[in-house]
Length: 324
Ligand SMILES: [Zn+2]
Image (cartoon, rainbow, N blue to C red; front, side):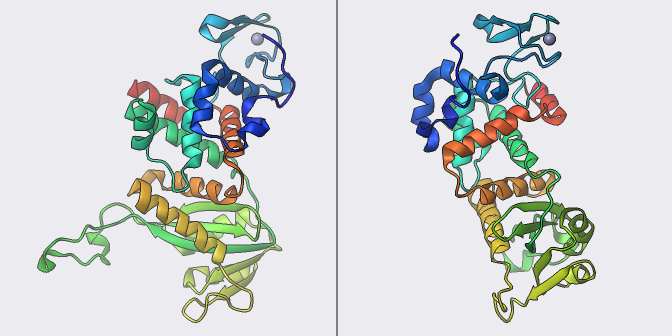
């Protein structure tokens, strides 16, 4: 195995700027494997580091794509301890899955991924959720400052209308709704980072805003009464959408474009994003909005790097074993 210089692995090369599936499959399993090593151990030029004791001296069990630490004898693979641990796919398929996932501007359905890669639906289902988890990691502990646009949108609690008018229920009544109706709140810095969270109603957002928006920030929100409480904590400007969408420079256009993406993900891809996974889809839409101008090869690198840094998620690890 030849030593490689830093940053030479495929996803960071100029060639990967526009990354096609064809390019991924042409590279083959060995080069895909090297790519994952480069992402896992960038500080050691893609050469293994023992995750248990930090030792750089390892035996390379090439046939099994595993390593054994010379100091503590711990055996591990490039994905041990990451969200890709207990993966069911070849490295080349895993990389292809990441490319398909980042290329899907409206998100990617697990069913489509399972068909594209000829893998089990459950494998694709867990993988898409893990990739969402990797995307969401970037938003942890995030603080917003400057001008912050804020808006809320409700998801879930749908009622399919009955065919005959006399059979239809009043969908405004809570008792007639199925599932939980929840509010996704989006906060977006002007030309900066974004953050999403899920609360029962817009008005419930204030404690979260307190934790994630700096005191000196200026908040732009619409006329919804849920936002009235913001005036007590921040310089808050309102735009009355029933009058105009831009009121002396105050607008929530960035928040609107976020919701248009999340709605497209819902209507065009997943059909149903409410319930326990709503916050993951909301975070995925944040990632896609924030990095929409980044070329897709770099996007694939960002998701892969994040995934290689993420500790194995207990929830999905258990799910994976159950699904096996
Ligand atoms: Zn060790």
